[in-house]
Length: 577
Ligand SMILES: *Cc1c(COP(=O)(O)O)cnc(C)c1O
Ligand SMILES: [Zn+2]
Image (cartoon, rainbow, N blue to C red; front, side):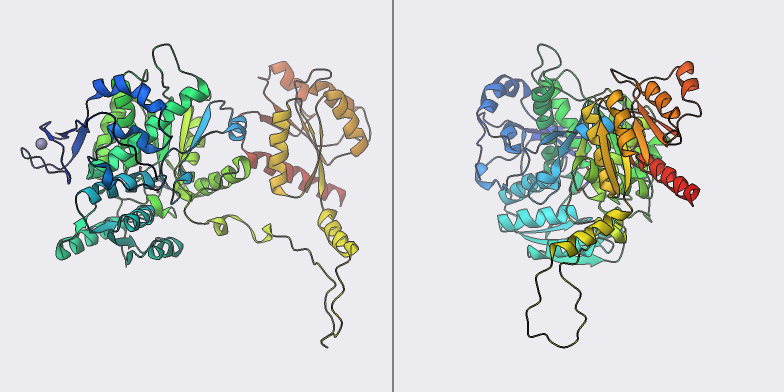
């Protein structure tokens, strides 16, 4: 991997987060000699860096180390890198169409070496450990930090002891073990596990990872902010002359220890000080409602987290019941600058996980899905506006979760040959499967298939509807892009359900409905109207009794549509009995 030396001599100071005392930077970072606190903020020579960066950055590859001048290691010989950072900023077109959010972006942190954004932290913290001469390290984790630290410590030749609460899925524990780390499962929650790890480290005289109190942890997460600001400027253009980079309106993340949002916020605070962006985005931080110490405290306007000693969520990765000073830090930022904490139930998280996979093609882990469930909720509440520029941190996917999500019938088996009935071993090789057998089996799969007509003039919207239906797997879909064509299509194919747009050029949806009502064969066809049009009282009157379901574009989820269709088909079935 390429090492990027700093172009500017490093010039870092440590400022005490408590009393403001400033001392020169050193590794490992000392406690404050004045007040004894150990929360230090790294400060750099922003004025100098902002002058030199534009030219320097042009020549550097897109990894987190391109921002080398704002990262606190002194000697690049100790840099441990495995290609972390520089992840894609994906424009979520499909999801955006479904939600009515044209400026929705996904920062795809699954693309890091161990598939979560913890790799940014591991790269910087392990580099700093290496520089400090550390050879053995203890870490407590809900899974992903341990996986990431294991990979990077192995790379650095550091021995790692990992302490994990017993609810961490065995797949994650095996992933940690394969790197050669010690895996200690503690039959307790995460906060107790941290204490056990601490005691062990003191007893053995081994360095223990300080988590959020570690300067490197927060500094590493800043790089998400820098990358997003550069990527948005390219994808959306700079907001106004004089500001080369661009801030989103919102940053959404599933939160437990809080290092991601604290780092992200600090990154934007620095970019703002350097005159690279015109403002600092608001944070929307989401927790599982069964372990929401930050959300509960924030809604009561308390600056101290409300400790949860018995987390009740399946999303173990973010089940931190006692987030400590991270919450207080975020509380002050968000009271001053806006932003919101929100909680979501696990079932909405798993639903969001499934939506991301089938609508955007992104398979994500539950912790990352929490952020998307939060997005859906905050849009519905009107707290995040649909036209705002929104970044969701797709924080990871480190193990398969499908077993929670799919019913037993997700797999269809087609026999490839005749079923063996004889118990005698046959001397002849079995004849190859005839294509008729296979077609016969496929026909059977097709027998209960219902036909759905999509009449929609926006091809993108039609494509999305088709996708939603196809992932359900049992529909035959016919499609037309004008009202006239649509009417002909309905007449020739007689579908089981019609999905109809209202605003179409040649013949609008109202006219299509009128024509159907005049045709004895088609007058009872169930019609679902999907429209972007704000309906007037007169429109509503015209549709009254003529259609079965009305869905407003940009405010329905795929499941609303599927449930509607299933209900209409079921009703149809009863009537035809
Ligand atoms: C660690 C983690 C989080 C929460 O991160 P914090 O910013 O420390 O609260 C969210 N998602 C995934 C996948 C994680 O690994
Ligand atoms: Zn101090």
